[in-house]
Length: 371
Image (cartoon, rainbow, N blue to C red; front, side):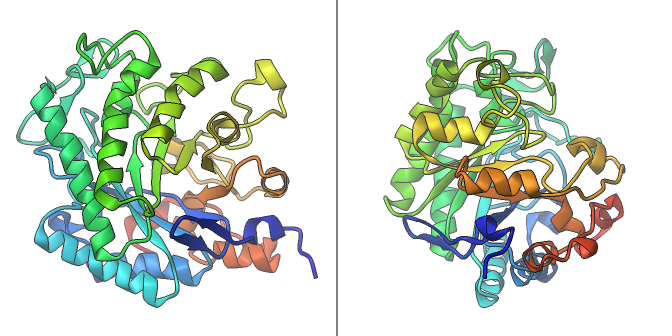
């Protein structure tokens, strides 16, 4: 017997990663890791989403071993004996519930957090900028860049050693890797800068290649990317498909298996000037141009804006018919769901059961605890 949402519940296989369905829990910063160490509450939070039917869990951003790699206290580390022991507890809990999970490894660059917290030492970025024309912190030396690449690789190797099923690199939303992509924050004149997006992708390519060398050929690597930045919603790295290919293909060639393509609303076409208002979204174009598997993400099940919701505005649930249509035609391979899973761990199970009346929208009050 078929269901209107069957396209969301097909199995997915890539290298060693085998998933029961196409629904991914998107990475969402929660800042509930005292001293950078996840504990039992974090493990239970992720386990509940597995029990609710999520096919793949991607952790909140968890930072690599650099002097200032996070922009808020309470963001978990993915380095150091104590933090890694905490993450072993998380993945063991997820596996015990029958789930699959990857940590998202991260460096926040020169960005500021929402709380106003300031680190004791200067932040680092490609050119000492947090946004175009806005200085903050220090420009990275080539030695600092090499050390950062190595730190990403160590974190990924630790993820595999601890038993995670995949690893995601955060290269989106105006954080460190994305600051190298973005011409507005990368004014370097060495080999990590340049006038073209292909040139400015060198740092990301080195990170991906180092991770591939560290984890071996069969461990899937996911790379999260975006056009928009928290510093500028309208920023675009690629104005045409050719520019997008110049940006993404070297990253796939370096070893990225899955491109996690973040846009504010998944249903919006990436290049409407080419294929109209019903055209491919970011993940669709990324898949078409590179042949890589892709994850789409952006306001699934919601009507509100991303950062507005995290500032306290609620969101209502909306229909998922257009999502199913895109999945049925294989525009992209997986769909990441974010905010609704913060409020409702059972959201996936309710979608599968056709319980539209039971679906909950995102409620910012849920940010106060790990529901």
